[in-house]
Image 1 (tube, rainbow, N blue to C red):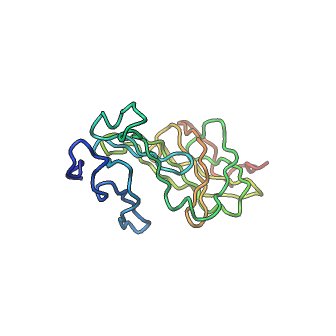
Image 2: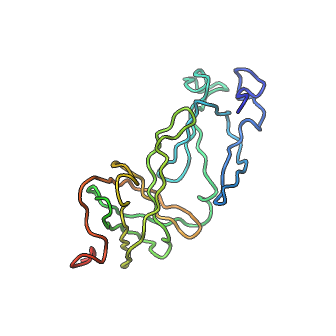
Image 3: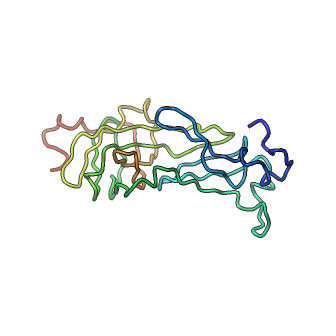
Length: 206
């Protein structure tokens, strides 16, 4: 924004509502104005996707607002939580279990869900590393579903570190409306992985 104070100097909680509205983008790439934040958030703000699908927004230009220790004045509450519309479109898929060991690139791995009929997609989302309004680790990868067996689903890991640098990722299961499960963390590693499902002597559900 060009004027983070909204015409009220340091007292940005009094800024006009238009300076505090969240901007959202739909699947078509169209931008819309969303709910009004308690505080306007400027260049030093951060937005982080939480494992439960909510968005945590923190920070501000003025450190006395961003780090105000008082809880009884009008400038406290530098952390705000945004619940996107996709969390209010019916029941959410369940992600019950993921591999505890690191997953090799281009290899199949299985997860379990108590709502297999709801699962239409699986997505890896890198934990956020954000500063100065830029998310330097904003990585969203849809995984191929290669097999289903009861409450277990086999997913194919990303092909290489070029697609997903080694490290930890949040794994979400999504339904046909894009409603996400609560994520669980998985770890990707370098090195040889298992062959793609169907090229092994026996399946991974043996």
